[in-house]
Image (cartoon, rainbow over all chains, first blue to last red; front, side, top):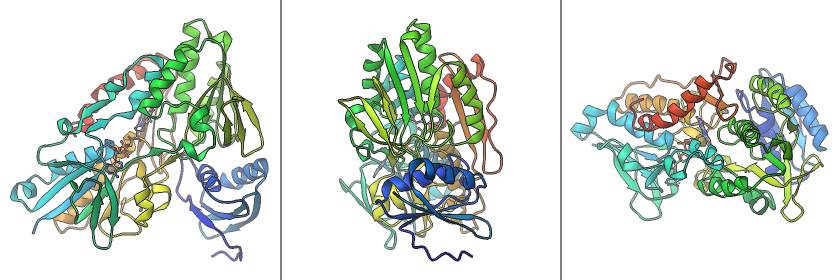
Length: 80
Length: 381
Ligand SMILES: Cc1cc2nc3c(=O)[nH]c(=O)nc-3n(C[C@H](O)[C@H](O)[C@H](O)COP(=O)(O)OP(=O)(O)OC[C@H]3O[C@@H](n4cnc5c(N)ncnc54)[C@H](O)[C@@H]3O)c2cc1C
């Protein structure tokens, strides 16, 4: 289980999402929330480890934490 | 007692499901043990893939419309009305005209996607689309008079219908302008939200070199935040700007509001079990097609396969047997790579796609499928 104390405003469960993929789902959710809100993305796709980091840097959002759960990762992204 | 199955939505998923149930439940329907009703707000069934060809003058919007009653089995009760509310505890429906049934025993939601360009300031005024009937007709006027300048195809909405269509559009536009001797005066740019040209890495890998070869410029990590219709520029979440002369956008998509109001899922997408297609938040409710949040593409082929699964499961439940049919993520898409060549992909939850080499034969197969689609809707193919 995860140990983070971060509170997420919204969660995107993209586990099992092959196409169009977890990062697309995350971007869609980031659009919906307000600046300062934290979105939690659940993904079981290894590619997300690089994808999510690259995009958050590019878009100036903050990747606060990446947690490794039993069978998936949890990304906490704060909207700039 | 008669069990009442209500299907909401007369598009691909709902129509195929209603016909599947009519066939599968023939004895129960004849004996009056089961009733099947389909409720939809448009008397016509609309086949959206036709819209890709409208801007290029190759199809008319009317080619994608047929009266629903011509496509649905006589044993199914067709009601033209708009569902406006669902109470999943009481298993009741509200509707605009009171023509839809007010109660159900089993509910199947196949209400599809709707476009939400207003979510991006300036997009509705500054952009065009081929994702709606009216959009494709307006775009046709624009394209026919477009002889020079910068054509930008921007994928804004995620998720959106038919993930292949934006690629198809730029491949077709490239070929169309070349054949008309205008390509040297028309620059084409394709923008995509993530770091590659398609959500699926295999399709992206296949498409990218083809775009480079054909001089289709690419902007990745490009998420439009606003459009300035007067200045003809787009600004992105990543802090970039792009000028355009003609903007063709894939607008943001949503499901219908009442799904969120009923607590079934966000933005109108129903949270479902990805295999059984049962709603997570309610009993006796299924979702299929675009509105079912399964993580697979929003495609007609998906709606079609899912209809078969929901049909089998409902039949089992109505007969008091355990439902065993599951959806395996199967998706099938044709991808036009020009005006007379196409590729083809097939994949599921376990197997990634591997696009077939483009050929004229596959292009003909796509056109032939578009014609025979009406047999699919009627449950014959
Ligand atoms: C340009 C374009 C090209 C495409 N090309 C392809 C392709 O080549 N291959 C492919 O597989 N897919 C393609 N698609 C995608 C495909 O059209 C959709 O994925 C498919 O139509 C989804 O089916 P559905 O049953 O979920 O929804 P729809 O077919 O959209 O049907 C939804 C129905 O629900 C009705 N409805 C909605 N709300 C209510 C309500 N409250 N009450 C009553 N009725 C309601 C609507 O009127 C409509 O009849 C394309 C889409 C577009 C836009």
